[in-house]
Every structure is written in C-alpha cells, then in structure tokens.
Image (cartoon, rainbow, N blue to C red):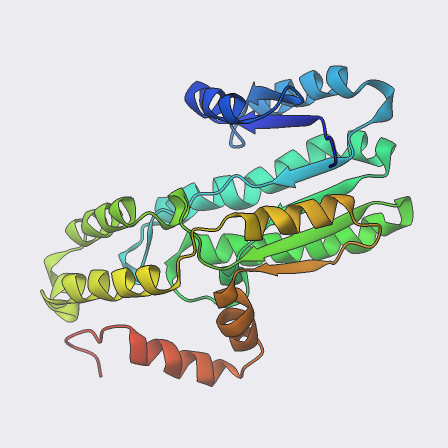
Length: 268
C-alpha cells in the first residue's frame, strides 16, 4: 500500500483532532481558514518547512460550503458572497499561494467541484461557485501542463456530508423566507416553503450516497496515476443522472426541474 505524508488543513481544532484519531503517523494537521489570506500564508510557510526542497506533490482543494441554497430571489447579495468566498475565492487563493511548491515537485492540483458545477439545479452561491471552479481548473490545466503539472477536477454527486445535511439547509430556507417582504412571500404563497422543503428531502434521501470512498478513490487516482484524468465523476447519480443531463439542451433541464420543483402561487 502507498504511504503518503499528508498535510491536512483543518478549519477547527476538533476537526484536526478527529482526523488525527483515525489517521496514521504520516498525517500532520494545520489550522486553516481558506477565507483568510493570513491563515493561508501561514499554512503555506508551515508546509514549505515540512516538504523542504522536494516541493509539494499534491494540493487537494476540498473545503466547501453549501449554505444557503434555495430560490434565487430569496437570496441577498451577501448570501451569494459568503458561499463564493469559501468555494471560489478560497480555491483560487489556496492554489495561487501553494503553486510555487507544486511547481517545484511537478505535482498535481485536485479541485473538488460538483455535479452542480455542470447543472445549475438550485439558486444561491453553490452552483455558481462550482461552475467557477470548473472554469478556473480548466484554465490552470491548460496553462500549467508545460511545467509537468496535472490539474484534475472531481465532480461528486450527492453524498452524505455536512454539505448535504438537511437540518442546516432547512434552517437556512426558513431564514431566507422570513427575511422576504410580505409582497414577495405572497407571490409564492404560504404553502410554497413547506413544499420546497419536502421536495428537497425527497431528492436528498433518494440520491445521497454514504460511501465516501467513491470520492476519495478519485482523489487517490488523481494524485497517483501516471496519466490522471482531467475530470472524475463520483457516485451513481453523477454518472447516470447529472453528467448525462449536462449534455442535454437547456430546455430539457428546464422542463425536468420545473416538473420536480413546486410552482409559486402567482406564477404566470
């Protein structure tokens, strides 16, 4: 079996402790907040000391936030910005800061996007941020291959993680609904929120997979294969539903989502 030295960036002390408990002696952790330039810089300086002259073989950008998701009109500008700060700006900042170390090792950059970076299935910053990760990664791959650097995108389907946890998603939907003006609420109707939550529950319970090795297996291949792929789709729903859907004409996706999602009361 392969023995990698892993430098793991964790947002919290608890996350770092949990990880150390299940990992071997080759794992070291550092506190890392991808929305803070200072935190990223500190982590890079620490990693530089750890790897020495060899450089860094692989960077896996896996930090993600899905909240809030919901109808676009329910969002405020800061709701979009909060998600983009982690999922898009965080990925860019991490990549650009660690790039000199990766270039030294002729290493790999692995960016975790999503099937929702191929099909915009709901409003909020999540889909937008994942489309951005796809575009950023494609640009990087084309620019950096001259230096022997591979850039891979992982597009997981729906998995049972904090990102798909129903309780916070539903809590945020209630918050968004409550901040709408009575006029806007009236256009949706008072039953709309409950219907939307019900549909979300049905979809999540039907498609969420608990086998995370489907994603980590893709990460491992991207980091170790002599010819890694530019894109990996992880999970049955990614392969059978979302990726095929992404090749369909827009009107097909529009109709499909229209059939699944509830209809606002005052729709025309």
